[in-house]
Image 1 (cartoon, rainbow, N blue to C red):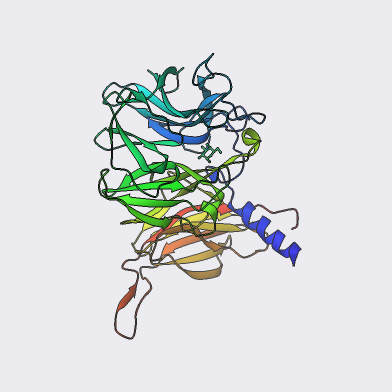
Image 2 (cartoon, rainbow, N blue to C red):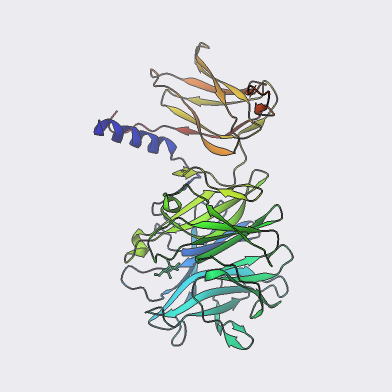
Length: 430
Ligand code: GLA
């Protein structure tokens, strides 16, 4: 039994991995073959590139060795740019200090890149929010000292940042404090009404006029069930909701750090970014969990853990027109169809056609779900070695039904969305 399970797991995992995918919870390697070391991170889009900033952890000490910057055109392959803020000779980011939760924003008023961070002593008893600036996104940042509010340093630990659509920048602090930043982002000018019940690692995004604030409980490097708040205004009132991942999953074994509003086809899909910490060997063994989030008014969720998935992807097929199709040639190895179920989903005809023209299998597959969810919609059965074509075709009909009181249920359209085909690589067991 155990062996069968293991084989099945291996098979599913190998089937899933293909190029251009974010693979969660495993070390990622940069262009130099080194582990991507950017924890408590954030992403800034600048021009056509994505810049990832994070804690450049070490395996031997929790002391601050620097903040790293990587860049990418697809959110998947990362090029190491440099350690953008190095350990300072002395002071708040000097030797034997902690440096965490680096966040960078481009200030619209000055064009400067402003980096905010948590600085502390090794016992976490001397917290400060500090900042550094640079003229270019991936240059050497100049450390500028503590962020001041009313002339005093902000003496707090976990931070996040949020840039609103009107260009205002905000510093998010643990336990529900939010400061509005000055127009140059160098200091804090206003403390917003406190949000009761917030924990650590605050992360915020806005979608459809609603502000979402994610936060974790206080369990140090241990994972817990992170939860969220919503509001129509930064001033509040904020509503506390529960978890955005299934309860007990410990946020799919991670702690939130940032939400990046990535573009997926034409849709704006917030991407959850979390840390799977591994103290004390963080540089080698701490990994990342990045997942697409689903929003529906004030409800926020990551309904499904995707071991791997493709960001910023135009679907291979996104159509409601009967007969529209996408084809994939393969050689008898198994193929999986990755696609999206939505409230507007319909049926697809999926057929396997052998090179001699014989349709050896035809199936009807449902792309409807009340809540959008990406996943595997079809896997070909084992086939004798030969050349085949897999065809996914819009059927032009959708599941719908009514209950005994004549309430309608089911889909309202015929959409079939195919994201990509995944080739199942044979495992050693086969
Ligand atoms: C929490 C914080 C982290 C770090 C650890 C240290 O997890 O969110 O940034 O400070 O505690 O214990």
